[in-house]
Amino acid sequence: MNTGHKFLVAAYCCTWAIQLGYLAWMAIKWQQQRSKLPSRTGKSR
Amino acid sequence: MKKLFLFLITLGVLALMAWGFYQAIYAAPTEATMGDVQRIFYYHVPHGMLSYLFFSINFVASLLVLAWRRSNPARAQVADAWALAGAEVGVVFCSVVLVTGPIWGRPVWGIWWTWDARLTTTLVLWLIYVSYLLVRRFAAGSQTPALAAVLSVFGALDMPINYLANRLWRTQHPSPVFGGGPDSGIKDPDMLAAFGWNILAWAVWGLAVLAIRIYIQRRQQAIDAASASAALAAD
Amino acid sequence: MPGFSKNSARAGWPGLVWSHLRKDLRIEWRSREAINSMLFFALLVVVLFSMAFDPTAATSREIAGGVLCVATLFASVSALNQAWSREIRHQVLDALRMTPADAAALFIAKALANFLFVSVVQIVLGPVFFIFYNLHPLGDAWLLLLVVPLGTWALVANGTFFAALSIRSRNRELLLPLILFPIFLPALLAMVLSVKTILNGDGSDPQLLWIKLLAGYDVLFTTISLLLFATVLDAE
View: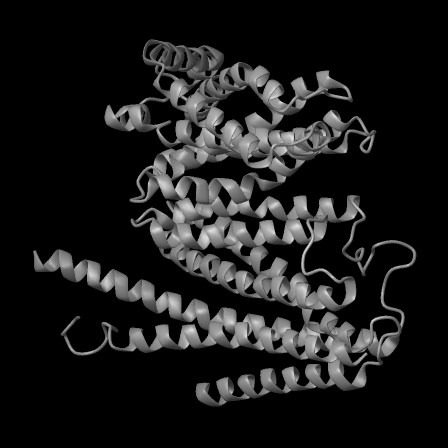
């Protein structure tokens, strides 16, 4: 069934998009935190 | 030493993912009636089962928040980080289910969606935990962990309700593959292997992501605590 | 008034519920503000849907359950949003935290009061509803008297609980429906499908499974609410 193939690809791509998207969001959060960590010099934001 | 450990774990997760993918796309035989589209099963169903795992983690962690919030606030904070992470990862996995499901349904049933037991209950579950996450975002204050934990208990009650609904009503969606009845279960050993590898791969992935999220949340808690005491000291 | 020892507070539990309930009912009877706004919203929904769909007799039996539930939902939310506002305004909750009185009694009384208000609205609008939709129940109509209160209790009990939970939030009015609707959905489903089965009289649910699910839902969620209400009260 050839038509089924594009749905298969779509499903797998969506899965990875969602999972990697979440990872990316976490990475952004991580970066934001790095500038705010209290363990740096006495300056706080 | 720690960096090496983390590197190996990452490698392991990626290897499992790749192996799972190979199993699903190449090693597993093509299904008789549905053809290649059926391979969505190897991603769709593990995500479905695992979302329940992460929501259960949220439930247990929330109970601990409620149990410890007076007696051991430090531990309650840790539990709260686990609760939040569990809910978020659960929502991610549940979202995948809700997206891959219709993509599979369209070519096979001809429809994107129907309001049968399985689809409806999954959507409800997703809505409940999304609302949990929104509550955590909107409700400001020191009592947010306790209130969110209470909400989480209510949300968790939906899981057995869903389980009952799916067992009692036979509907459009395929009946439970495992333990559904005398004719259920995967018969083909290659298919079973592909399924097994994928559920393992996604479980490991999910737990790794959970660990990262908990770490980030703990750091956030430290930052918030530091800025709170800095604000107090500045006065 | 309950005494100051735990024992006498326990013994007077029904009395405590009754005194809270009487107070709420009396205040509402004097101003009737909650019931009026509920009646208005519910009527609006019924009229709007009737104009939007203009159903035939057969169609109306299919959708009546849904319309009734939506009307009840809107009516209830408008009442639930200010369910605890009086208590907050007069620092009643703080006072209660200082007494040994059982928090659960307050919850049950508040839920019962709201349940009675919504039921009054349903009783008033019921005939209107039947007329607008030309309803003619083909099944056991008396079962409606069981299904509708069960479904309404599910909504009101959960709603009262979550209203207390979201008291201190900035977006309280937004948060309440946001939390309530997803959790209420299984009960909503059971209620709508039961009403549809009853009105259609098609015997598609001989074991009354939906009604049993609804009753089970009520028992489960009411119990959990009773157990956790003290926690919520504490946390404010």
